[in-house]
Image (cartoon, rainbow, N blue to C red; front, side, top):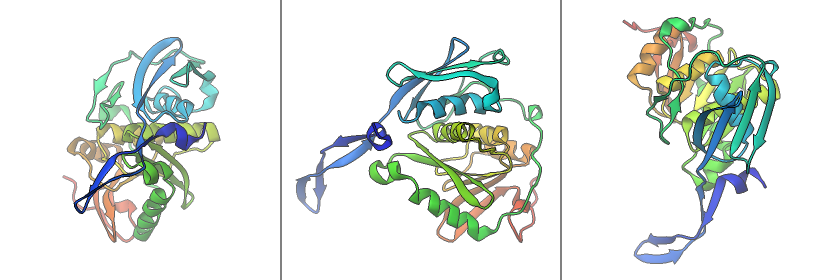
Length: 266
């Protein structure tokens, strides 16, 4: 079954346009529960797009800070009808599982939101030319076939070495970022020092995932929340919002944007 067939559901709705009714053919996003088990214990059920569940499960566990590479994974498999990811690590799960419900658009949740002191500030790295942000965001949209066909889908991308290396899609913005991390693990791509692109809101948990991935720059087509901004200041993240047309806003870390100096962040 193809990725498109898994993630999109065909529908023939009645369309009203200009005073006339017509039956049209459309696709809508599929929403499906995917349960993640780690070392035999259920840790989360993600309401997500059903394609590539292994990448989603691995990325979720990595973005919780439980693994950094596939070397820590002894077994990684998809079971059931593709709605279960079974992971066995070479070490115990670090720390207790504590669920914190988030502002996710699909009722997202993360296991733990650490204090800012638990993560070290990221290094500055190279500066980013402003025009490249528009180019990469446009390319992300062009390489998002699920969104183009069904709408209602979030995209995430990883830029490294000046080019868009990986693209992931999901009905949830958190899931898209987790899926991206899982794809990086499976393909041996180190996300550290990369630039994250997202079509969704940068909330606290999105900033946390970026910090844990070691990506100092997060770029969105929409806004960031106040808590994300506070955490970004502590973790030395650059948050770029509303990248549309020829305009964007830099909420934090403007020193990483070429020919720009950081505004006061007091």
